[in-house]
Length: 188
Image (tube, rainbow, N blue to C red):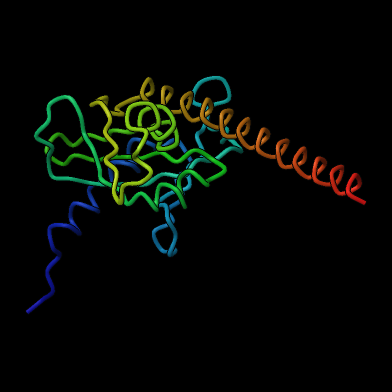
């Protein structure tokens, strides 16, 4: 008797196919063969002025799939809080969550860092003490050029925010070291 592909394998293949189809003009590098936190490294490509020119700035993507969601307005996924802290919030590039729904054959997305900073920090300040956290996003499927353009713009905004946060953190560390050296000289 031959081996059978289980339903989860089929769902995973369908979700990966949807990502490949919708982002066919972009550089989509699968990280599935690596034991790594993310499923893809993606580099958007210009689709208008310099068609086919790939951006030097990547983002990571985490792909999740479900057969269907009962909620007509939102899709969601539950994550270990440690994963959000250790992998997503520590990443130096944006991390996009793609959620594939088989019933509608649709791919939805949100940027995990922005969700943590803007939604969870604002609406649920104690979320960092939980063991799991639900990331919820509105149903706004990625379907065409307009959707890819919104995704690209959101990724660029998040990259600027990450860079600014890293710059401020570095400046604070330098100031703290300078203050420590100054205080050490005063003690001598």
